[in-house]
Structure formats: C-alpha cells, structure tokens
Length: 66
Image 1 (spheres, rainbow, N blue to C red):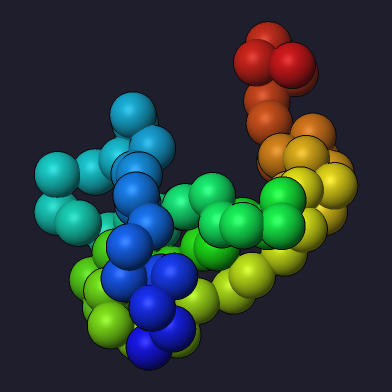
Image 2 (spheres, rainbow, N blue to C red):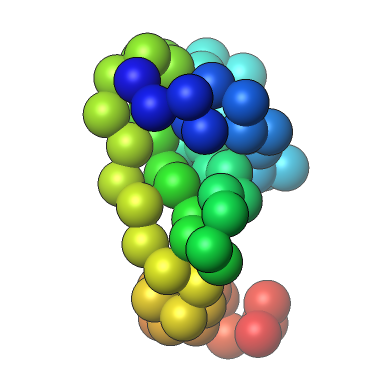
C-alpha cells in the first residue's frame, strides 16, 4: 500500500452503520480524495481529484442536504 495511504486520516460518515458496512475517505496530497471499504483497510482505494469528489457528492446528496 502507498505510504501516503498509511499516513492518511481516514474518516467514516457520521451516519455509517455500526456493523462496519461503510466506506472511508481521506484527503491526499495534490487535492486528491481516496475512498476505501472500511472492512478492508489494507485493500484497494479509489482515488479521485477534488472536483470529481465534489461532483459525486452533488449527485448523491438528498435534496435537503444540498
């Protein structure tokens, strides 16, 4: 695993389930965001730039959260 992933501060959503079935996100250098399965912290992560992350959030938020 990339050393930057190991040093990253990973966060779960406030509304994540207690059973651990959720994703975690971390801010990386270069305005990148990493997303991984919380059950597999040493597994692969999806890395996107900040603009892609904002677009994803805008499309997936409920209208009342916008």
